[in-house]
Length: 161
Image (tube, rainbow, N blue to C red; front, side, top):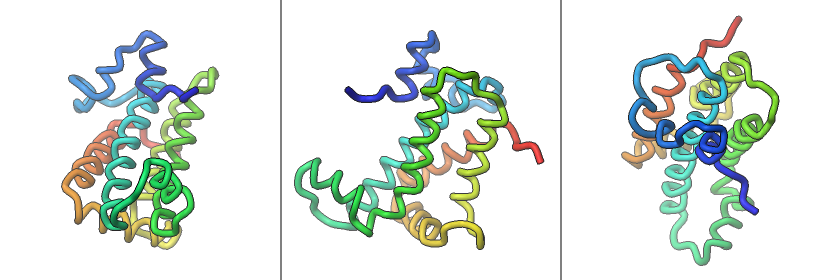
């Protein structure tokens, strides 16, 4: 049985899933509800991740079946850099699955992890950053997805020092 995506979980809790990506999803209002913020983050990260997979698959060349594609994503060294982002998405979704209340500190912590991953620096994975910036330059779709993620991150609470 497939795990529900963030939009499905929000719908089950009485929130309209279209609000996650349609009108009002990316206005300039700060996001104060941590569960809504993480759900939007999950959807936005998935969009970016899918786009990055498409870019890397295009670079790799023809892939056989969907099963072979999955194998490439999970074990082939060329796709290894994407696994960091996959892990973050899994962590966000696990937190959304948790029945405990989500506080703004948890949402801010995810924001920090993602911002660090997407930024250059000695404490970050240089391989991820290099391949990520290459993908942004190679694909308009990846650049747009990156922009949407950055915009969403700007609406999330600032981590406490």
